[in-house]
Image 1 (tube, rainbow, N blue to C red):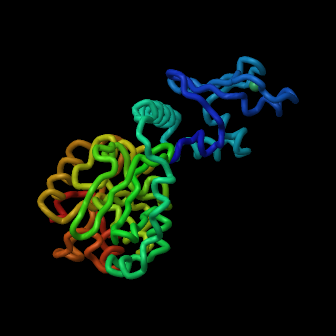
Image 2: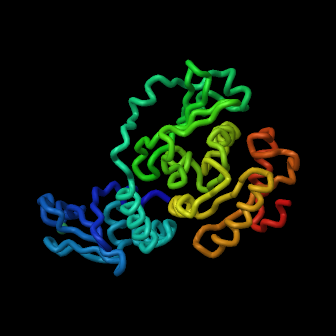
Length: 302
Ligand SMILES: [Zn+2]
């Protein structure tokens, strides 16, 4: 789920339990634009109010008016996004995360200027297409023959740094960036169901197989922050961590800790390719079958 208000294309500020913005219906109601942010939404109450023109109501009414829907369509729209309470939680966390970002790091998009679209030869070894790498945001360092995997702020997409890797070498730049507070793929996914893998390159592999909900945790240690991010964007996640002891332990922990918390967990069906160590190790048909056959029970995985 993207923030409902982003989807509504409203320009808002978060202040405590409320969000504030210029009244979106002011002009239609009064003939004049709202020059001040007279409009607020209180998510605890689930109501909005413009103290200037008196426009007020339940959150779905705002959705109805801004998106020009009828009442049942608008209520559906809100329900599909988990209700107004979920919108409030999303905004709250978004604000907290924005406050946590260390803005002193001297990293910006220009830092990536030396890197290119990965070459066909390197992509072919991984069974994905250069254009899919590009779509997913994976780059290449032609001087050192290395994958460059950007790490971005989950909300703003701002560059935090990147990972450099090839068969012999791996490094985080800058060291210590908070990659456990974000997910690879969060800015490019195009599906209703998330598929959680460890390696960003497996997100590209999934993409080439037509599976476009891939997200990578940058390792087997999936953090609570990462799971919360998945819940903010999706109703269902297929956990596709590596087919090894560490992956199995991580799956069990996620199942124990995240059952009943508003996110449906399923587990990749490795029985279609029992010897594959991760989804990147399967052929395209196996990947599709393993995703299609994902189980709600963790036991079926082993
Ligand atoms: Zn108004």
